Amino acid sequence: MSGIYIHIPFCKQACFYCDFHFSTILRNRDEMISCIIKEIKLRKNELNNASIETIYFGGGTPSILSISEINKIIDAVYQYHSVVLSPEITLEANPDDLSKEKIIEISQSKINRLSIGIQSFFEHDLQLMNRTHSSIEAKICLDIATQYFDNISIDLIYGIPDLSNEQWIENIKTAFSFGIPHISSYALTVEPKTALASFIQKGIIKNVDDEKAQEQFYILKEILEENQFIHYETSNFGKEGFFSKNNTAYWLGKSYLGIGPSAHSFDGNQRSWNVKNNTKYIKSIQQNLLPIERESLTIIDKYNEYIMTGLRTIWGVSIDNVKKNFGEKYASYLAIQSQKYIEDELLIFENDTLKTTKKGLFLSDGIASDLFMLNLS
Image: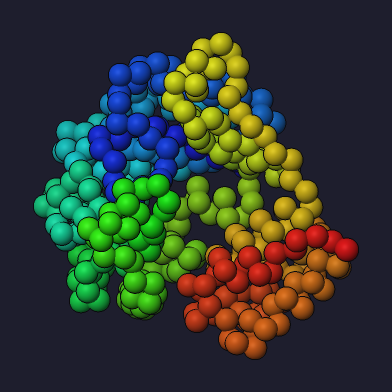
């Protein structure tokens, strides 16, 4: 089974913290849609006829598209790839795009899951991040969307300057009030070359407090788990039956095809990524050329990838899988490198599987990097 990720590189305006590829200039929108559809056709054989079980519209802001544009892209996936009977088809959306009419239109398409970028229910936070929607729009959107979709995820951001723990708890409880079955939550991160980084450097916005972010992460974890959410990946919480199939496939190392400018792909042996430029992408596709760079993965790359993704999930890192797929030397190396984290109660062995403890979960990426194999001597 495989998935297809479709990157829609357009936004109404730039969020101050975002470093994803997008453009606020929409004049080549029609050409972009045509080229995305053409790329789907050009790459129809890359997944070796594997069945598609997830289609994910990310970006950018995919909800900026009309339902007819979205349907054209979905139809192209069905035309050129084998799709399972009931695939998970997700549309990332901003609340200000989701009018009642738009939500009804989407519900009548093949899309069966919404991922809505709420980020916060407080106006101050939304303005600080330069979001396009208001708190009121977020609540109205969720009130309507939950009438037409059972499978909804929302994004919430913690660690925002001046966001108190009490306000953070209110954000979480507000999400509960709409019966949302899945929450993706991330610490506000200061990425280089973003407006946020510039504003912090100039003293216009306070810097992010890592200790406060960590505290709010554990508040989130405690409250969600008390309310029957399963913390199945560092940034993702879902009720039983509502895990993101798209993201889960990525963490479990399944193959996926990335369509659109800047989109990444993975087939188990190679990583590839499209050019991060709308004009170059369109020009290349129109000439029947794929604007792709490819990287063949070494056994060390594959091992490191498995460690990174495994430690972020409830499934952990199977020692048996390490032995089977990488060999005894890798298993021995992992045992030695992980020992200090086990002693510090950041990692634990459970049923021959290495997992992060509650204490270590927030630090999982840093721990994983220390378990990476740099060379095999």
